Each structure stands twice: as structure tokens, then as C-alpha cells.
Image (cartoon, rainbow, N blue to C red; front, side):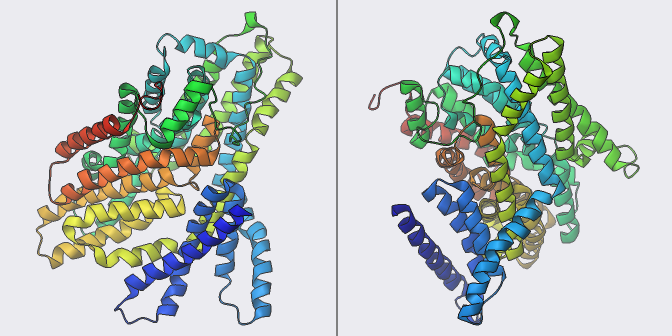
Length: 572
């Protein structure tokens, strides 16, 4: 009952918030307020879905209600009480027969679901053969305590830069049992995995992200009449990707300094003191309760884990090359690796890699006579079955993304803020807007596609109006490009409806909302430093390398003064 009251209060508060914001930005424009408010109300959909997730701690219901609310809004204003009741019933059925069905039927989405189920089965086999257990023992050579294990997890995340999905899978599958051994909370593990997935892939000169990012940069330059090479702009923007750079350094400093704060500190203390790696009463995205080893000790080997994982990584790299080159065809005479990898479909390639890893895992088990084929299938199916809740949440996340797209919520946020821009403040404001849109929509790529065509032409218009030279425009353009690319990553990082955030929860084996709640303070602190130490001074022409050094120093000071060693008792 108490949660129902909280939800009702939050629902009313969301309406009041949207009304007030719309009133502020509508003031003095001469438009009909009620008409404009009607266009702004759809912003409540992501606000309600995300807010209910925190209140109810039930992601599936919260996403369902968000989709329902959006479907109800899309039916329009009812003309009578009867029509209103009819809309409420019709919206309920449209959640299933339109939005969920459409999300599940999408080829790319179904590829991710199949990929998740296949790898869930492989991980189940690796657990039950004792392969992961033996891999943990092999890692003990370096990972001698919780902090070295965190550094090893961070380093593994940096190494798997080719794709963010592959990153979460490999790092999570390999490092979860190692981190469990040293009583690292799943909250901290999932944070490290999530924070080294998209940031690393978005920064890498060769990855599944790079062609998409370059394509958006090039199209915005063409529309704006800005001269230059898009790949050169991509490389020049790397020092201005403050959030992506700072979050990677922040993870390392937290481990080296042995300091945490906020909910993460509480989670780490719980894990160290009680051995409870997840919050009591929580619902982990991956069920590892049935991961008992069924192979005799003398037959267990770390190769049963390493070879399937290595096979998947190698197959993915080869697959990206083969599929990317096939996709390019004769369009590019002499394509480079960035062109080839960028043209590949990551979902298709990862599905190939998962299928190959599954075959290799079965082949090793049967070849070494660890299990019969029937027994191996039973354990594989149990592993895949543990992914069902995660897959359901992914489908609902895609469904609400579809509703959000139809409601044009991103354009409402842009409309609210477009008159706030000025050249020097532009990178900082674009960073904020990109983060807000990615948080509300749960997609970094979608946010980039929305912001680039709006922000760069707007910047060009402002430069002409203020009499800026082409060189002066370029000095603002580079940090602005970086702010779009990394602002989208920040918003995606903290959004509970983001697929990469969900996948980090899956492969860490943690309750999704526990992952989201514990990492938000860290992400927001790093985001604030990125804004105030990075993009605000960058807009006024301060050297980005100086800003990076200062930003790292500020993050270190925050950890030193506000963080505490989770191994020590409170107050020490």
C-alpha cells in the first residue's frame, strides 16, 4: 500500500514538474499554453518508468506501465467518458499486440536475445564443468586481493574494446567468479563492467562504434558547411571525451586508493563483512544458484572456460572483418580496418560467435568425456533458462524505446533548451542535453543521431551571427562533437532502460536496480567534473590536456576526502 501511495505521489509530481518546466520555457512565446503542454506531457513516460523502477524495485512492471502510459497518450485526447474508458482498454492491448510484439519481432533485437540465451548456456556449461572455478585459481597469481582483482577486471575491460556487448559478456563471465572469491560486491563488479564497455568502445579508433560516430560527424559537417576530415575530427575529439576518459581513470583510482563512497561503499562493506555479494532479498538478473560443478575434480580444467571464451572473441574479431568487408562490397576501393569493422553488423557477428562458442564448448565436453550429450544439453538449457528474466526486461526496454520514439520526446527536450545556447557555453549545454536525452530514451546511438544534425548546424548559425572566423568555429566544433559522443554515453550509462546497462546487470549476476542505484552517484560525480572542469572551460578555449589533468586531480581529491576503505570499520 505504501509503495502505491509513493507511485501516485510521484505520478502527480511528474505532471507538476513537466507543467512547470513547460511554463518556464513557453513564457513569452505567445503560444497557447494548454496546447504546448499537451506536446510536452509525453516526457512523463520515461520519468514515470524510471521513477517507478526505483520505488517498486520491479523493472518489468515499471517498463510495462511506461509503455501503457505512452500508448494511452498516443491515442489522443478522448471526447467523452466512454471514449476515455475505451482508450484505457485499447492501450492495454496495444502494449502487447503492438509495442512488445514489434520489439520482439525486430531482427536485431531477436539476435541479441538469441545471443544472450546461447551465451547463458555456454556460461552454464563452463560453471558446471568446473572450468570457471579453475580459471579463478589461475588468476590468483595476479589477483591476490579485492583491489588487484578490480584492476584486473578494469584491464580486461580495456582489452575488449572492439564492441560494448562483447565487452560486458566476456568481462562479466570471466571475472564474476574471480571477484566473488575476493568478496567484491556485485554492485562494484557491475559498475566496472558497465563503465568499461561503452566508454572504451566509443573511444577506440577501431570498433563497432567508430563508423557510426564518423558517419554522424561527416553528415553534420556536410549540412553545416564545415570543412575537414570526419575521422580526423573523431581523433581530435578524443581529448574532449571527458566523461569517457574520467570514468575509466576513476575506476582505476578507486582500486588503487582503496576507496569508495555512497551506496557502493555500503555494498562493498556488506560483501567484505558478511560475504553477501548481492543485497539480501534482491533478484539477480542471472540465476547462479544452480551452478554446482558436476565434473569429477581430476577432470576439471581451466581450458573448459578459456577456450570457449577465447573462441568467441577470436570468432567475433574475424566475423567483424568478414561481415564488414562483405557489407562494404565494392563501395570503398581500399577500405581500412575502421571502415570494415564499422560496416559490420555487431548483432549478427556476435550471434555467429556465440554459435561457434557453443559448438566448441559441447565439442570439448564430449571429446573429453566430461558428460553425455543428453546431460550437457540439460545443463546448457539450465544456463540459457537463467537468462529469461533478462531477455524479458530487454524486450520491455525496447518496447518503451519504441513508444518514446513515437512520442518525439527528444524533440521536446531540444525545444525546451534551444534558446539557451551561446557559442562559449555550447559544448557544456550540448553535453547536458545529450545526457538527458540518453537517460530518458535509454540509447546512446539514438541520442547521437538526434543531437548531431541539430547541434552542429545551430553552432554554425551562432558562429555566423557572432562574427566568428572559421578557425574560431572549429575550436568550438571539436569539443562540441566530443560532448555529444560522451554525453550520450553518460546518459545511457545511468539509464535503467538502456540495453547496455541491462546487459551489465545480466553478466554480473545482480539485481538490475541495485546496479543502477549504486553506480548513479559515481557516474554523476564524474559527469559533474566533466561538465565543470571539462566542457565549461573547453568552450572558452582552454587546452583539453590541461583540463584532463585537473579533472583527474579533482576526482582523486573527491575519492580521498569523501571515500573510505571498505575493509575498515565505519568511522576509521
